[in-house]
Length: 322
Ligand code: UFG
Image (cartoon, rainbow, N blue to C red; front, side, top):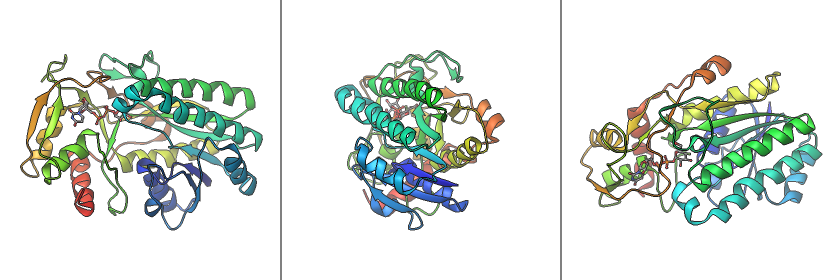
């Protein structure tokens, strides 16, 4: 397969590129490098630097590579609290960016898109989320992803294209090679922040609220290893190319862990201090995936558990020292 990975220099995109290359697929990466890194792009992929809101840049890619089988989209802003503060940036990048991408794909007769969406579209879920559950995001990040999902459905239907929408739960960890992982100046996600507290790069982990309606009062999430998630994209792209119908699939583990469970898992590696503080705006109490559909349709199953995820982020962060 020939695959265009939009956002392939970023955290999840770079892992997808590695998995595609392992399976001998041809990969072109398109990335504006605002949060991606050139050195995270495999040497076996072709890197084109550009922004998805720049239609002429995308047109040039599809003109040169008019035999692309599948486009994968990872070029989104993904931080819930930042989306609450800067919603316009989220609408511009996450919604308008995909609109331009779809327009260019349609004009160049590129038929298949694999889109990264999120569990945040479910909003205040009551427990385990199924793909057909009602969607009711409670933060701008989730709203932008849901708006884009809907746009993709209308556009692909109108122009004879196909989509696979993946709704990710909480992605963390790093590839075994430790060449790629989550790199950022200001980390906000629970696992890397807890690892920073473990290795002395911050004083402690602040836990945002212990008065939620969950067993220990802290929020519950479904954590999934980035390499498991990346591999699902290879299966998903193959599914579309081989004639599979458009559909939406959760990527998670079927299992929930509280923030305190995660803190305790990190403490198995060494000393890590945490402190309970105020709730953070935009956080739903509990998000857990049903992954039955992914198992059935793609024959996908996660290989790694919470300890593997935490340990791999720890190993990666030691290589960075920040
Ligand atoms: N948390 C803390 N302290 C921290 C960081 C996070 O207590 O320093 C808590 C949060 O309040 C939340 C949980 O840990 O309850 C997980 O928070 P993250 O910031 O790691 O992740 P989110 O659940 O907010 O969001 C992530 C992705 C979204 C995705 C969502 C799906 O960023 O893209 O998972 O579940 F939609």
